[in-house]
Structure formats: structure tokens, C-alpha cells
Length: 374
Image 1 (cartoon, rainbow, N blue to C red):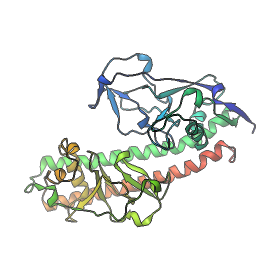
Image 2: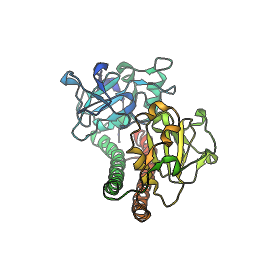
Image 3: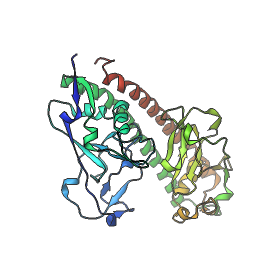
């Protein structure tokens, strides 16, 4: 198999996004989702968290198509750990994704090169470090189409071989995405059962949340300097939607699961079923005081509460005063048995995804440098 040296400048051009007007940004969902650097995962790929919406007019040229390749040209982290990484625009329930400023749209100049191969090339660490090392800015890191296109690499001359390599890597992402869809459907199933109970059952006496929970004490705090890009345990960090990094420090891991985690200064809640290390301030861990109360029921009850004031309370006191409605013990135990099985399956699917990502990340550089032939 013959390999040839290329420069990205010979193969692609990168189009700048549009400066959408801040007055039309919307916290309420609309049909238009405004992409930001926050929608890029570490390691590349699309991250569907903290979606921003737009409710105004704009040029039609800045509507993105499904499977368009985009790159982030701004990074708020000191390490610039997402700068330059690529992602693909997903299908999203009939909504449109908008090409925002500081996001680059990658377009091929030639049909002689496989687009998906370039997508994976722009997810390699060697490419991303090249971009990050040439970034400007002290606090906020910036790059440019010119800088990105200076990257040089070798690739198979044969487009069919390029496509084979991209297909192997994409197959892992397809499996991960299918598992994520299953996880979503399973959680929706449990939530619908919860809604049915709330609608049909006579509730017991209402009490405050603090009457049903116990706070889980921290074992050890993990310093930001000890965060790793990869490790055995994810670190719960509210500043990054809870998954802030990884560690191998077993002494900081909580072994008593499942647990409900939520941010001290935010409205975000998570139901955690996998081993993790809680290293960041501003997160609170709770579980039911009574083991016969389903933690998933408590989780759904919490996310169904009106927590609009909690964002401004800045402490745990407000949430503990929320009124919680519980069914009788028989209904609760039936629900617990049913949903424990559901969330256990969700946990297994998440573990599978972790293994798939690890395998993909091991293969990526080896396929891209010709160490593994296809």
C-alpha cells in the first residue's frame, strides 16, 4: 500500500461561521440549534450538551447539513484540549443546526480524497496538538483556517483504502450511538412508568426531600492538576456537565451506588450508576434514606420539580425543602424492581461504550500511521 504526504491546504478549505445576534439567543428550545465550541467532545466528535437555540433571521447559507464536518476554532480551557478537533453534524429530530462564528465548516477541494478519512485524521492527537501548540490567546485559545490547513500528514494514495480505514473507525461510533439510543429509550421507559404512577396512584403524605435522603460524604478531593484525559474512573465535575476528566485514584472513588448527583450552583442533576470519583467542589451526592424507596423514582421526582429558584439559591438548603410525593410501599417496591433492571441494563450499555471508545482510540493512530494494514 503506497502512502503519500499531503497538506490539509491542498485538500480542504474551511468556511467561517456567521455572527448570530445575541438578542435572538433563546434558552427555550426552538427549531434552530446554534452550534458552539461546547458541542465538541475531547477527542473530537459531537457533544449534545448545553444546546443553545436561536429565534431570529439569518442567511440560509449558514444552515448546516447532516454529516457536515465542522471544527472548533476557539477553546476556553487552558489546555486547549478540544481546539481544532472535528465533529459531524448529526440528525436531530427535524431541527436545524446553525453554523456559528468560531466554528469552521470543512469542505473538500477534490473528489480524489475520502471525506470521512479526513474527519478521522482531524480527530488524531498529533493533528490536534499541532493546532493547539500554534494557538493564540492566553485565557481563551484561538486558531484559524490558515493554521489548521498547515498540517502535513501521510495517507494511503488509494481512496478505497482511505474509505476502509474510515469505515472501521466509524463502525465503533455507530455502535456507541446505537447504545446511546438504547440508553435514552430505557430511561424514557422508566420515566413513563413514573408518570403513570404519579397520574394513577393515590400518593402518601407529602414531605420534604430532606425527610427521604441522606447526604453521601466525600472520601477525597481530587485536584484539577490530577485530572487525566483517560483513566479508570470518571470525575464528576459540574463545570463540564459532571464528566470533567478521569483518574485512577481508587481512594477517591465512591463504591456505594447508585447515587444522585447535582451541582450546588446549577439545576443539572444526574443519576449515577457507575463507579466515579467526585473531585470538584459544588457537587452534592444523595441517596434514599430508606432502601425500599427507588432511587430512580426519587431522581424523576427531582427533575420534575420546579427548580427554577435553585439556580440562584447557591446552596443545598433550597433543594432539601422541595416537596416529594411517594406512592404506597407496594407500588414503590414494584416500581423499584422494574426500574432497577432498566437502570442496570443502562449501566451495562455505558460500560460497553467505554470499552468501544477505548478500542477505537487505540486503533485510530495505528490505522492512520499505517501500523495496521486494511
